[in-house]
Image 1 (cartoon, rainbow, N blue to C red):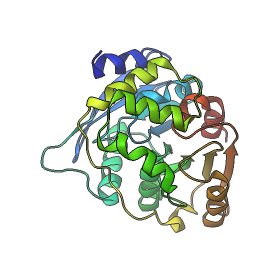
Image 2 (image 1 turned 90 degrees about the horizontal axis):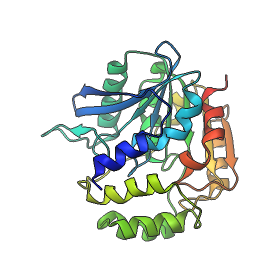
Image 3 (image 1 turned 45 degrees about the vertical axis):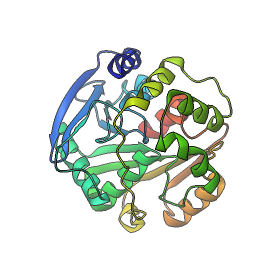
Length: 272
């Protein structure tokens, strides 16, 4: 099975109709999958590293009833976005500029901006630089915002990151999820990401929390996450953002969060 075939198989389970668009940015062409009423409030979703926009299907099924959902393939990550030759994304400022151009292409604001894991880190950096473009910021098991990763998690992930194979990807996901039954269609797509060109992810400092305090922020940590201590991260988030709503979702693991906690995530995204 090719990557594109696996991608379309997962996308085919989304609530229809789904509109796919290619948006030009200074850092390449960005693919966005959109669903829901065209005149509904805009909701922009960023996946975690190694995932694609299709991971948001279960969330879109609920959120697209009341919002126009725009799920983005991160530039340089697995998906249908195509990085520009000669202008790679290298810094958090680059990522914020890239996302700013995506929002320009969508043409609707302010948006509810949400991200999972690495996508949450990108969303927070963008919101810290451009707080006026977000009506609300939702961070789902964010990494590298309120604290670092557990060394044991990093060591476990390194073989998969350095030399990805379907077996290594499945083995890591099985370990991180505690052996939970994961969607086989989604797992087949994750298998195919092993052949995707490897791009070093952008790293950098934590986003400045001061501008984020001007926004309504909701943060949800996966109670079963192995990448960090969710209780400690929740405490750190409350200290950094005293007015934010911070929750820990019991029984939810990090990588499968958009798949297995879709109902809780949809409530966080759409409740006023």
